[in-house]
Length: 462
Ligand SMILES: *Cc1c(COP(=O)(O)O)cnc(C)c1O
Image (cartoon, rainbow, N blue to C red; front, side, top):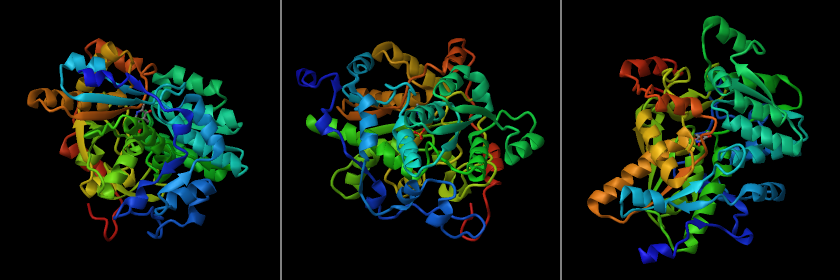
């Protein structure tokens, strides 16, 4: 206990200890993530093809499997200084509450107005768009954190920002929409009649409440059809994991100052960007055979891409306009059941994390949403932070691991990613508080519907 007390509640980094480069875990992977494929030729997407949709520098980052470290431009470092380093907190109060010998740390990414880690990549993507002389960017947002983060970054750099927001979130989270508009973004509920694909989806499914995959199709269509615009994406892509490595690099630098080595690193997994960013530098050590860690991805039981999905090439969007990515997927037309409140609703998973999971470097579990909100409530009461539902998946798993340590008496060190705050998720909390939250685990038959939409070609059997 005394030894513990030498470690402060929060470990900060001095400005000169802050990372100046991102870490690209692909450089240390023996089996690289499979390349994006052009859906019409089934050949790897070339830089030229990708540059129709994405900014040139981001295309280069997307395709870079070789350089382990990439310099963070000074302008981005300056922006990071406004809200980074994010706190690395020793969860003494949670440990006490659980009466566990485990030592729990969390890296808190909610201490900026967007309320999540998404700002780390938003500023990078907006910066490269600006540097290329573009007028603006388009994107989709589900729960709204990515759209908010991108609006902030675009406002800072004076870029136009068009956000397609999944319709049910647009209606459920009017305040998030207003934050985006305050930062100058235009926000359109998706599906909308402003795009060809949106009109088609509306015609086929007039009552749809939208999905991320559908909003992506709309945003891509607008970017490709508007001069001076490119599309940006807040998760899943290799470039996003690269930018998010700032989370893991900071966490590692802070822990190293006190010679702390985590045994277990836990993160929630939607498209995989926060988890990939948090674990990257630690995973690098594991891949190079220097140190060993256990990594656990936590996903909702209602959207179980890693634990129940297929590792195949699939579209990244519902409209099937994006390249094909090899990933664990539930099928691009998969939509979680309507009672699902906890975010993390994307049908696929980062190709980097998918490959690492496939090769046995990472574990994955799924948890049910009522147990996720129980964990969120406990955490809010003892640690003071009202967590985002997404983040609470990681809290659930960290608590469960700490309780296992209580049984076995093991003093494991657990690090988890607390990706954001939940102030805009009060409709979900309200359901939980009213006892109206239920769990739904899709049946194999439910999942078969999504799998049926996976493209079929030689070598892509499900
Ligand atoms: C977007 C988001 C996630 C999930 O996205 P990943 O790309 O899997 O990290 C998790 N937590 C919060 C707070 C988010 O906004």
